[in-house]
View 1 (cartoon, protein in one colour):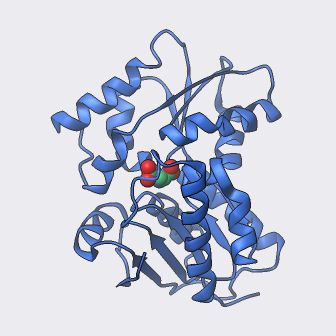
View 2 (cartoon, helix red, strand yellow):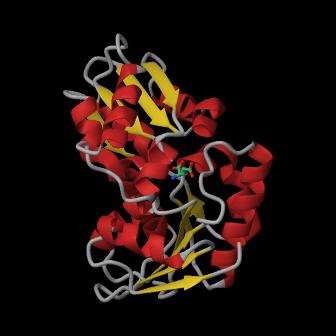
Length: 266
Ligand code: DGL
């Protein structure tokens, strides 16, 4: 048993899709969340830039006393997960394996899509995870930069013309693929899940924030790191950019909201 907080980070509000599930699974755990909003979006950055940002985020949360880290960012998980353990010295887990496993167990026709940021698509990491589990599956990938800014701005409704256009464009990239399962490989995308479900009608959507939270709980349990507390966990967020807009969007995505929010230097 370990009463120290867990650490979770992402480029912005996307990782809250994992926090929302962690709150439900582990209501006694205190959570330190870092949203690197001064540097969002991560999806267009080089591997070198991502390494530097991931190390800084990991060190920040380790310095604040986290006992383990969930990298609630598909882009960092795909491109440089190894730097997180090295920089923090803590047990850590990303969001790839849980989502790949769920997709492999969900597809009926063996055709799986991965919708992600551009940097994640470029890395090919989701394909490798899926093929390691089920080499016979057909995997189709597309990276987009259009959805993250919408989620950051709290614009998620299909009735919003910009959202509709972006999700329909994403769906069009998979037309003819015959996928029956789609991994939302960027943790911002589950925040747009109802709009994406409309555009990808009949396709099962896998929330990488949710599956990452499940995998992380398994890691905490296996290492004896769960808190003895069963309720009353607090969520403290740190942001490197403006507090107000983060708080507004976080309020939409995290039932119950954040207990505390503080600014930190990027
Ligand atoms: N939410 C992150 C991801 O899962 C980062 C998206 C971005 O900042 O471009 O990929």
